[in-house]
Image 1 (tube, rainbow, N blue to C red):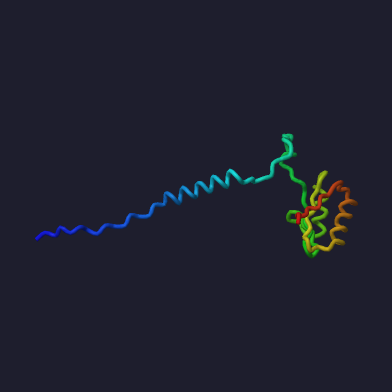
Image 2: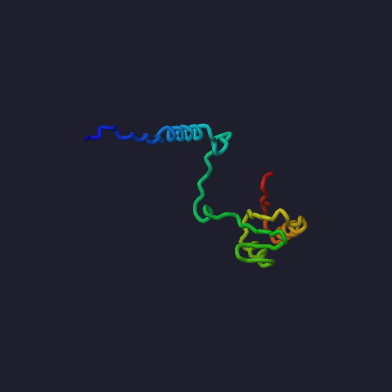
Length: 126
């Protein structure tokens, strides 16, 4: 006798195509509506720097929470001397928020006495 019964049918696998479509639609939506940077109020073309000045950044002196001075690999008072030796027209001072204001003021006074014309104190907006 021959068995003519039908074999059980397997359920078709769920298609991931609709989910991919939704992901791409969301991606396009967010790309079209987002703004990574605010637009500039007027169009400005900055000048192009050339030579050694193009790659130079302002020298940065660091003041730790305990008042420790650091410049590149140099620490302590030697860091201040090394910083003054390479500081150009503009220098940066990055002080820890927990550093005493009197210590920061003393360092600024020493920099002014050493002849550093302009020091920018780096701060984070609130």
